[in-house]
Image (cartoon, rainbow, N blue to C red; front, side, top):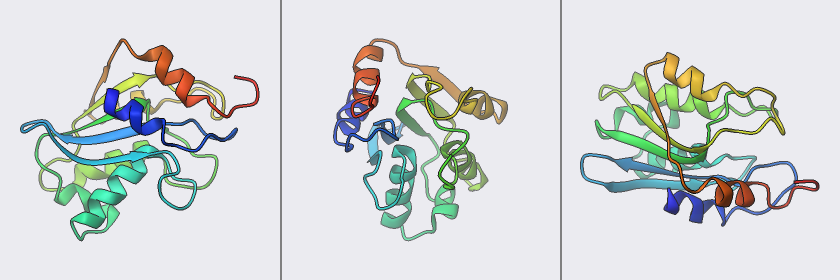
Length: 159
């Protein structure tokens, strides 16, 4: 989670985004597969989206087919609960994570979360609930909440 937080700190501060970091890990080997942070790639990109897009590109598959090349024990660390709704027209991160389940190996089965998403941009985010309903285990990682939130809201007018 500390790596995800350090990635979030690379995200440009903006009043319309949370600064979030994400790390895809093969839990069986502890190998980092891919990383991402908010606005790392062109467009209004989220951290989880960037990590998945970079991994799919590195493995020469479409983002929709990334689940076919993820190791069996792939997990995701993200500083903030994945979004369940996007206000800017992009596919929500929860849908991207769920999309990995269509792969032969089963996709992302566990998501480690630093903090729940505040209601700042989308009220009542149900990302964690939606993941859990699909059988994905969500685990809160305690201890860095203050640093995660301080980083996430940097650039907001009235934090």
